[in-house]
Length: 330
Image (cartoon, rainbow, N blue to C red; front, top):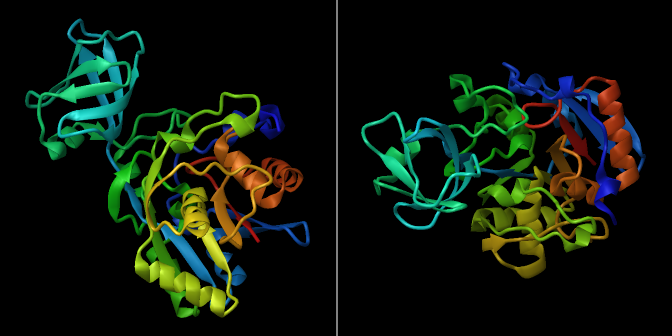
């Protein structure tokens, strides 16, 4: 399996730059693997494809305001994306421009907090106050959204059920749910369970090897509470379906199914040939080509069928990527 097998062409104008005002009015492409059929719906109609005793699994991670803009002492602009906290003041980070030198100081428009470059991917702040450090930041919109973060992104780039801070990107498949829609789903006899997987750079790190089986995922923290474990068991006993919302939820569940591990770190990389143990259906957004996310959905539904669905979505002018439309794979 070559990386080039997981490619497709997308017109740039289909990359969504803004969220819809009504989350649940996004479009929904329903892909049936058995029938090999495609249907086009509005997201709020997803309830028509859920059955009593099904279990919807949501990732309740919350995105941190981890994109910081600063400047060098010489005046040049610097962008720092905080990836993980090593200790009180030290963070692993993506730093632009890459030509910054070790020891350089970065200053911010604030009450005096600065940062120093320790090495290519690490900074240390002059303050250990984590709240003050994140007050310097904004929501980390992905690079294909060609604008600066706005106030609306503080709301729309979080799911309505986001609870535990720790992610550097949003679990975007869940962005389409409203509290009202979730309540309607529960009243229909469909269970909802929560897991936490803090999305890190691992999820969107580029696949750089031609032989995809050689790609190594970085580790991401996940936690599956006992209440969700019980719901999983109950669903299996009642022959309901487990419907994971997003690739992050899926990877957490599949890690648990393979190892029995309920919390810790996962570096599970799913590619075609993987035998799914826990997930019956997948709700997901449309993903960039040549990424671990696109490879995962190809593993779940088959490369040929996924490419057919993507071409249909392009033909029908669906909105792509983080603020785009969704696909339900049955």
